[in-house]
Amino acid sequence: MTMKILLIVMTTLLASCAQDSTADKVNESESTKLQPGAVALTPPPPSENELKASKPTMLTLRGTVVYKNLEGGFFGFDADNGKKYMPSGLKEKYRRPGLIIEVTGVINTQMVTFQQYGSVLMVKSVKVIDDSKVSNNKGVEM
Image (cartoon, rainbow, N blue to C red; front, side, top):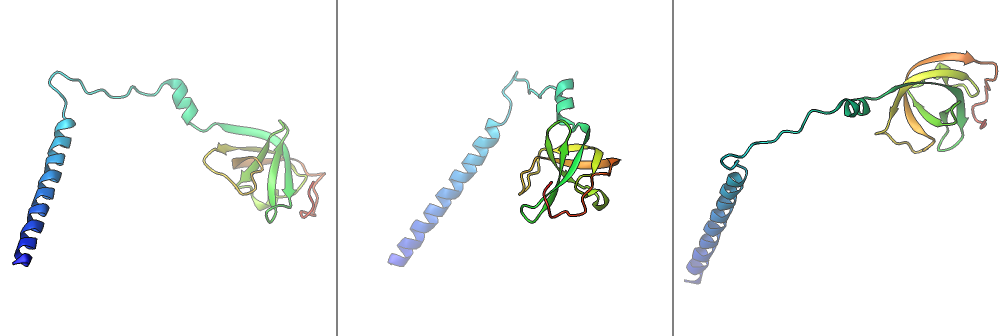
């Protein structure tokens, strides 16, 4: 007898929960409908300044390749403008401490590094300016 009562109570509870969730779905779909006379708004197209800000800007910088013996060692780029960069994609032939280069690339603001040496510069091209100060000992900081 108690088993029958328990079964009836559980069935009633389940049925009531199912009705509540169905009612919620109906109310949700009704609330997303536009009222008569209402106008759906779409966002305006981005302005020229917003478009320029969203596109990465190609930079051309002149500076020196450096080697830092930190976090296992890494190559950085000290630009003549005083800023420091982490060159990503710098070919091995340019990873020479003291090498003065002109590098073209894009700053990647979405990437961070363990070294935190400077902004990550995604290297597109490199031009050697002066290799007279190149050090063959990359284990020594310059």
